[in-house]
Length: 353
Image 1: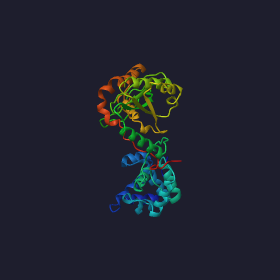
Image 2: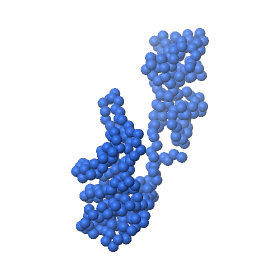
Image 3: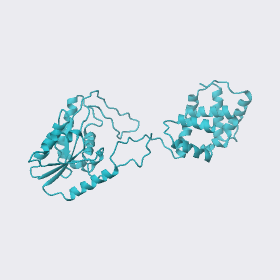
């Protein structure tokens, strides 16, 4: 709260002359007018609304005036939105910013004031950041990934597999997904000014799907286990075999989950008549499994911006996607689910400590 009556009679007279003068720069006159209104007891918010500017700007003008007097309002540093920092100060500030991750302008403005004795408003600081080449961004979460060499090795191995694939062989990618009974709001186009909303759910239930996908035929066998484990993995492998009676060898590519390598799966593979050949993905490489993209399509079609009053209705919608939508409409989203693999690294990111 800024107390009124902080101006002396001479200071007030000087500002009034500035406001009434036709020769004075408009920006300077506006700042002088704001100081006079503050002295009259008007709030920063009220003055900001009247002048169509940010109230932090008013506070910045007030602080600058109290520190530097009339010169702080009338110097060239305020005119035309020009920066008040020298080139050397800007360079020093950039070095300081590169060494940390500031979540708001409060920290930046405090540093500028302490280091350079310059006062910036919130909006002024944002403009300064833009001029210096900085933008307000959220860090990207980086999952763990295998080394680039292991990823490249798998991609080469997969390419060789496809190139040498016989007519009596097939390739499936497999994984598990656990859609949760929770409303998932997502971005979409709406009329400007409208306020879209969706009912939320408070349930904690989920649906377990252990599935596979053949990218050539888009065959997608799946099982619906109570728990995803070695038993469900064997059930899925058995279903893949039963749907491919004419295939001599079926290559199944999946991740390194413990239940994918456990005793149940080993016993299944040990059968003399087994036609399954397992290929393990490199650790922490879901981007090398196209079925992960199929899960994304499922969420787009079933969970995003959709409310299900009961968990049973939610589960039925999930199962209907795999039983009906996927077999009938797979060509409409075929381009979203592909084996266009690439090596993912963290080299292009500035990883925060």
